[in-house]
Length: 143
Image (cartoon, rainbow, N blue to C red; front, side, top):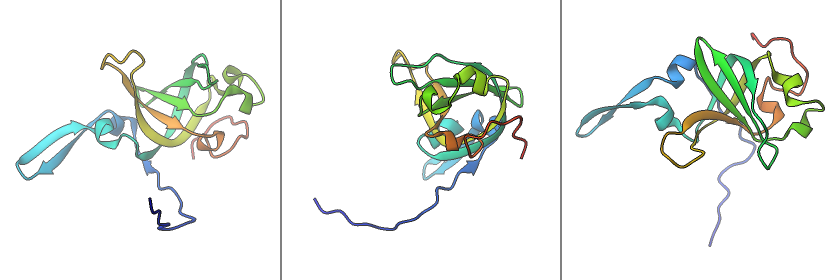
């Protein structure tokens, strides 16, 4: 198989998204008319950012050490899934995140633990840099 390098040194563009938009609908125009679909379903695997999420609960790590942050923002619940383990934090995940206000950037993903079709859409972050832009302990993230 042949591989062609198209470009290098590109910066990922994160579409700033609100909780209302995340759980809202989008009307898509098609040749045969329009269709209204959930924003999350249309944006799976695309990069977004969201600001001012308050971490209300920190989930237990899975076998890879990754965990979920359960957050609220603008009266809505949003799950943030980490792509890193607790050992990257230098302290416990609860001590680091619980009660904090965070800004995140990641991709929209669908998680269905039991493969029952009633999963949830969440934002997957891949490194500690995707939360508030650094590993620095934070008091708030209102910027």
